[in-house]
Image 1: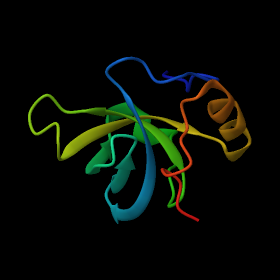
Image 2: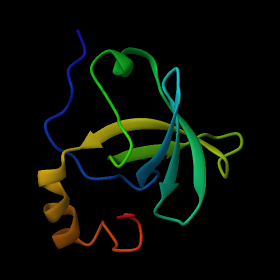
Image 3: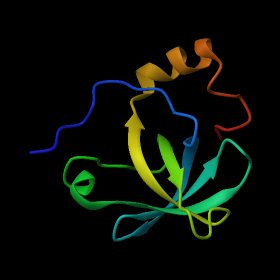
Image 4: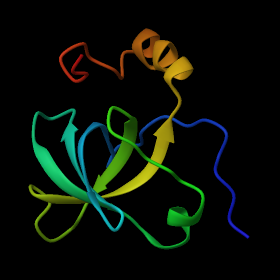
Length: 98
């Protein structure tokens, strides 16, 4: 059984993203930290325990093919951990829409 990790930072090939719109069937539009909007999906066994909603902060990995347009969601942050990301310099103010 796969379990969610307790907390993690984005690695070098991963991006931080803000979910702007849910499309259904595990797909969503995510505004990424490189100012691109990607169509992302929750893959495999992650979909069983990772419930993502609009306004959530996620880690995504761009796909190898069409890396400018698509990606996979790997992790979701709780709102109480956003301060830690800001303190470490991962979260920029322009990423989150209020």
